[in-house]
Image 1: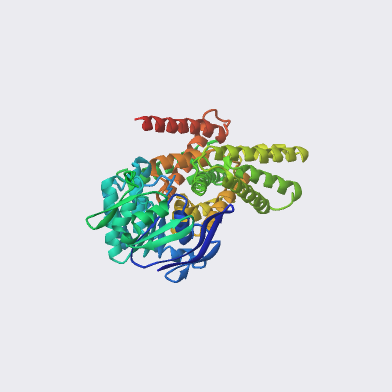
Image 2: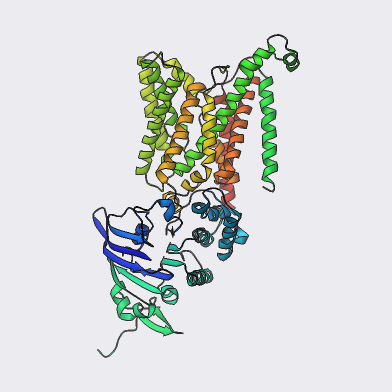
Length: 259
Length: 323
């Protein structure tokens, strides 16, 4: 369980998060949605101790992220940031292998190699394992980063836009794999832009707006025309297809007649 | 790439051959048979001059190459090395201060002052680096060269005032002709530092992936930064004090290794070490043979050979990208 209590954050005097309190349950997929600048990425960075907490408390399974030793947290929680510019020339297998570093500290055991192989396979990268990252396409590289985070094998995995650069096939496959891992007890907190991925795969959706938690609930509760209208300041038609709410955000709603 | 072990064996074999050549070549004739029979001055030449010189070259090559590799990981910039970050110039300034104010101090003490100045200069460089826009990688070595220029100018002015200019020339151009038994042993410190660098190879590789990734992987970012900083600065200071700076060794060798092997330092460090030592040995042999019995400074030879190799690499990369 990730508990966020009274977290506020300013960058150069501009409020990014204002008094956010939120409990993210253990197990399952939690999706953070909201317009640009709502504070989603900042919240993830604060949970993952990449940015120093200015006020409030965040605990992960009871461990305070500001006081718990960083290498202890590294075995509990991992994060993939949105802007990955790993300039180092590493092969895919090297990169994913470093995901095991918090566990083996430089002396990989057979079990570490097995987990790396497994992560590579999960992301469909086994064929590409000896390729350098700068020789890959954007989507392949993105899968390599996700594989690295999965190899870290932490209970909590924070992913900021994991579907970046992925084509439809790989995007769906990735979500299916996260869902499968979540059903085995892993907890994922993901920021997704495509609201329909959140609607289809998340167990809990947290909508952020202007640095505050606007609302939270199941996809059926959040992905509705009135809620989305408030969060995104946009009139979005929501249909139900195969039991899932489906937001038709690409299309402007037909003009209402008779009013 | 089929068998890295075989390639490493080949590299080490050629290194041994070059080291043997380096022992044989010199201004005075030396005969291995005579050494074995214990005749004449040959044993003395071997022990007092040839072996120290060869060891000094190997230690310098190994440690400067590894320092460059580590420095590039810490700054995440392929163009950074002690000569493009103000480190070497700061070490020179420190040594100058030591000679001017504590002329009677032992060499080890003078070297320590040089090392402290090198650390301070490198810290200053890293502070400036934090303020540079991250998407302008070429700005980093430019600013580093400028910083080095400013520190170098201060040192020159100071040396001019204190009438120590001739020393400055010695420290800024690496030279192994003056290496004798008793005058190179400090270099073993660089060997130890290079070994420590290898022990921290994984940490430095992770640093090369950036701050966020290193925190996520549970690395104590500050501590590893300091360890790297000290390895690079002290190595540079020792090399400057004993044989003089060899500019661009720490730039060219790691870049060649990175192109071929990648930046996983666990694998790259042994290659950088052998290539660094091999390149210096070769340049030193060329410098000694080309106009015997005179010598051409190793820095000159290295500059010519290194620049050619580096240009080839840069252009080769370009045509590769176009295809």
